[in-house]
Length: 315
Image (cartoon, rainbow, N blue to C red; front, side, top):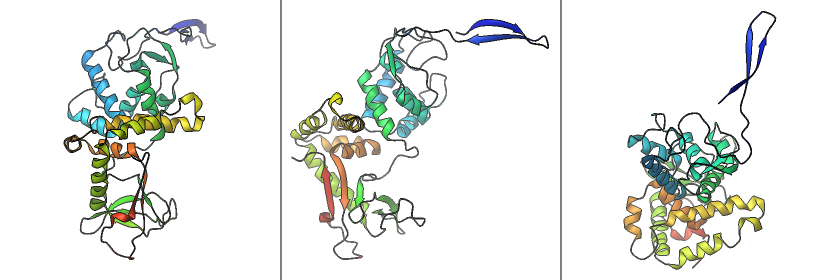
């Protein structure tokens, strides 16, 4: 609430009030004012059970690797409104999941943009109850800070992971005349972020090869144990500051594997998973996938030996 602090009259006889914000002492967890925050009632303290369930679901799915674009689209398709009754946008989903409020904390200041929300400090424990944990919010913030990309979710399983074996540049997916998709090292005409433009591999057989290998890996109980030991080998305080975001992203990526590990569960879970979740599963166990040039120049026959899968752990 604003309070009038001075009352002045200018030379033209116009009366002016100067307003200032009341100072909230450090450590104070009062709920403040403004529009109703999603997940809480109009008193800004009482949790709304239906919206808290949505927040919990969004948090779980975001940590499992699903994109905010896909989450916002699904909320709108399901007819789930925002706290103001409007439609969801990607920045609204990001702002919600990066908010200290849903973890039961006040932030240093309210954030107008999703990118600011990712960097806002946790200040004091608040009087309202938490809906998710602080650790979950921090993991989502780490994902937000590392993925500034906006737009449509990637359609192809190895987008962002496949790298050219000749120039080591990332490979993108494109559709050739005739409808066949390929991963291609793209050579830009203007030279910006340009690859060599000479290495490609068909999407369908490459994805199938990776999928079959992934099914075998996730059927082994030892995989998640090895990944967990690798991700949690050192606490954050012992890591170099520049390495902490990478460690947090990898720990968050472990959530993508929930429900996919163990004998006989992979196929059913994969069938029902969204494209974002599928990509997140591959990301969780992968550093990169190097596509080497074909042994015979111009050959379009698929050769699995061309794919070098650099995994985060080996069994």
